[in-house]
Length: 279
Ligand SMILES: C[S@@+](CC[C@H](N)C(=O)[O-])C[C@H]1O[C@@H](n2cnc3c(N)ncnc32)[C@H](O)[C@@H]1O
Image 1 (tube, rainbow, N blue to C red):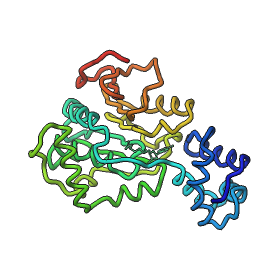
Image 2: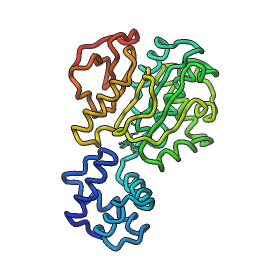
Image 3: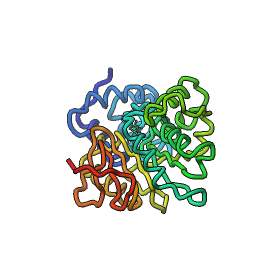
Image 4: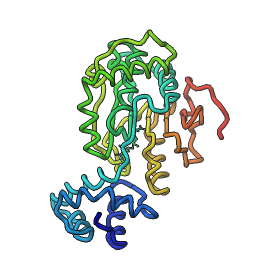
C-alpha cells in the first residue's frame, strides 16, 4: 500500500471538505489512504503528492478526478426500509398532507446513495395512494456521488429487491399479506435523480413537504452540518416532516420544528404528528 504523507493528507482532506463538506481532519489518514489506493492505480500517480496535484487543478481532467475522489471517500451504506419507524411516519404524513391530484406532494430524499431509501419511500407512496401514486407525490433523489446515483437510476428488475420492498412496506404499515404487487418501474416513474452536493444551493425553488436526509450530515464538519440543517429547515414546508439518521440530531435549537419521534421532526403547523416532548 502506498503511504499517505501528512502534507498530501492535508491537501486531499481540504478538497473533500470544500467539495462535499466531509470531515476528514483528524484520525482519518489511514482511511483516506486505503480508500484512494485504487485512484492512484487508475490515474497512474506514483504517490499521493502527485495525485493531490492532479486532482487540485481546474482543468477538465482534475474536475473529473475530483468526482472519483469524492466517490471513493463517501460512505454509501444503505438498505431497503432502513430505520423502518420513519416509513410508518411517512405514511401518516402522506395521508395528512395529501393535496389531491392537482398539486402533488414534494418529497426529497437527500443523500439517497444507491436508491434503496428512495424506492422505500416510493413504495410507501404507492401503498398509500394506489397505482396512480405519482399524481399525489413526486420524489427528488439527490446525492453527490455519481456512481451511487447511476446505480440508483438503474435499479429495476431484481426480484429480491421487490420482495424486500413489499416485506418492508408490510412491516412498516402493519399490513402483512396485504401489500400491492409492484414493478420497480412503477416506483421509478415518480422519482427524479439529480447529482447535488448538500453544501451547494439546490436548484429547486419550491419547498418540500417531506425531507429525508438520513446518515449524510454525520460525515460533515460540525459547522457545515449546521449550515446544511438550516438549509433543510428553510426548504421544509411549515407543516412538513423532516427525518434525520439514527445517529444524527437537529443542531439548530431555535427552529420551529418539533421532535415527534426518533430523529423525526415536524413543522409547527403539522397535523399528522402526535407530539412528544423534545429530548
Ligand atoms: C450512508 S449513505 C446514506 C444513504 C441513505 N440516506 C440511508 O440512510 O440509507 C450517505 C450518502 O450521503 C452522500 N453524501 C455525502 N456527502 C454528500 C454531500 N455533500 N451532498 C450530498 N450527498 C452526500 C454519500 O454519497 C452517500 O451516498
